Image 1 (tube, rainbow, N blue to C red):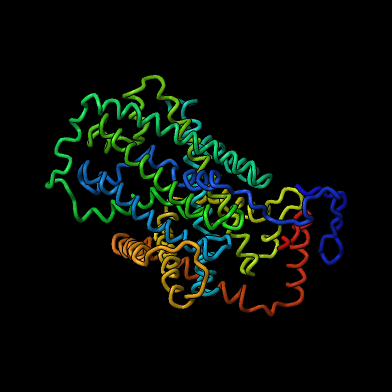
Image 2: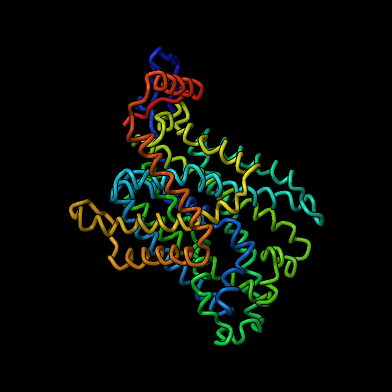
Length: 489
């Protein structure tokens, strides 16, 4: 860590820094501290949230049978691997942080990338973070209030504390953020093992009645299969988060593809075996009737120990919050560097080497939505946008194969992999338009507000002098308060 003995801010807002003699290299920059293990923990830690513990019933309900639901879980794992491999090629050929935003920017230009960024900033990311934080607040308090329900205000207070602690952790240290993420990832895998091991033990003892006629044709709902796939792909979402921090990955040419492949294999294996364990202990009817499948499972198998399950779910949610914020902040950092967000968001804390402003920018919007917004409706508006822009990013991979054939590609996938995956993404977008045209239309309209915003904030730069002076003054004030300076490259 760099040690600064003197820090002065001149009238024009630039920092003059005197660096201690024992400073490693005199540079203020984001360090390459994401190793293979940390990369795996980021991916697994963000994919495995509350979903696998609470509600795998969406897939069972729409697939119609136990056997077909397991096929959907495996198929969604393979499709997600296709997407992850496509992003591995993008991440090794375009070694910039920022994920979807960066790849769309490289392939299709700044306007399309800004629209993606705009939708993320004003709605998708704050709402997504608020929802997973609410699940954390609910489950961390459940053992305290059992058997009564948890008061709404208590959930929101616990949620606010959770969000604040994650923001603080990401602001203070990249190393500690990654260490906590590794610890939380192991706690998630332990929680899944606590479900899988007794479930498989019962299965090997001959408890197979719930698997009889698992592929009963009369129960399979072909019309519901697209919705089952939609639920499954949502459960696997998160494989792209390592691409948001590519610039901080050690040896990204090897680490990114390896971390992605190992993580997807582990997650798919865990998801399928967890569902096998559920079906061993619970019938399809019991699973469909349960509000929190893991809690019901634990109640049947573990008696009093089942009180620990909500704590594991809360830790799982906290890990997802931590990993998501770590990734999002890097996207805002890169977008600021490209001139699409205020300059202060691309500045680094002088001692802690974290993009402090980019970490904190989501905090007020997330807390605001937590207390006043209908977050779940907003997520419905925006869920299809996720797959639309991921599909566009992977389509960009195919497009750049032809427009930029000489681009270095240390890791290259067969063309059918991004083709199948992008088709799947666009099919899910079409399914959203068909099944829920009102909410999808509202989400599409919200994203289209990014077009005038692009011209107002980016293209039209002839601001009145008084307005520009005010913005410059605000930028300098934030810079002084947060002790951040432009990163050195």
